Length: 351
Image (tube, rainbow, N blue to C red; front, side):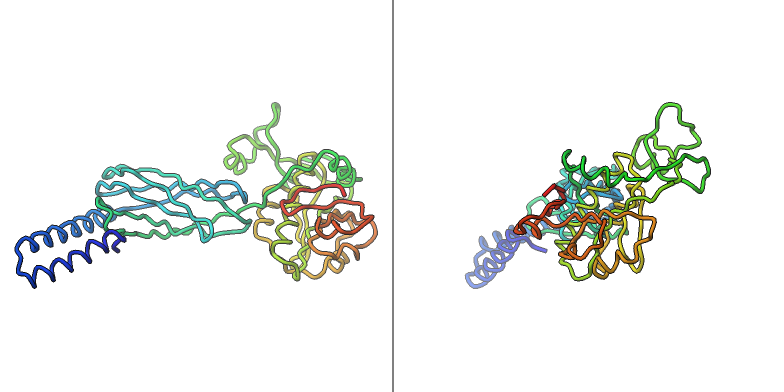
């Protein structure tokens, strides 16, 4: 399709042609032929490099909201092309990168960096390659479809030391464990340490992290603390996102300190995650589909102690013994409230 410059050249060519026809001026016919030639050259140089062009991408399986995500796009052309623009991503998070030169049959890799604004699971694509040609009079576009997806994790924030000192005794509680070698009792994974047996290496996690990771075998003996995410179906999406970030921040603190903790939420029944990556994958796409938090907690398994990241004002009705972590805007104007509150970015603070 013509650019603004191309549209101006075409309009000028038509006007000169009409004027030359009326005046029977050979000079104007020559000028019109020159304008038409420029338009044809612009059209040919914009369309030619895209013929025989192939594109494929490599997108990471996971990203984090608010952090750049690099998508590698490989272009292979049958003909030399110059100044191609590659666009990739998903609606709301698409970005472009310039490819100054593509040699014939010589693959070129360009990195398109997108910035995920919100957690979620997104289908990536399509890849679009744009060429404006030598004169910039026409912009030709070619689209490549590829079935890729990315899970955008919620952002986490470090829990302040003063808050961690108060939360950790609740998270660690009576939970303990004993080691076992039985394959069916795999508890999670951890970084490799000198002396670990090679048979315990978890190769899939090792390939994903780029460092050796081994299986952790542990069978809990006491009740595990449950970080319960309120998925009340009546809450606003922004409030739920804030609660998800807070729950992820507390869960990260527990995992780093080695506490026996599960991250839970109600989705037609209780869903629980012990390990970091599955838990964050779940938080990436979880939505509000549960009854009010007190009703959900009534069905909490008896072998769980609850630390709750609350996403609504329902904390006033929570059962005794449940530690509530509440939205800061709910308690900012409430005199005499003492406990824990979280901000929209997931930062947990003592109140």
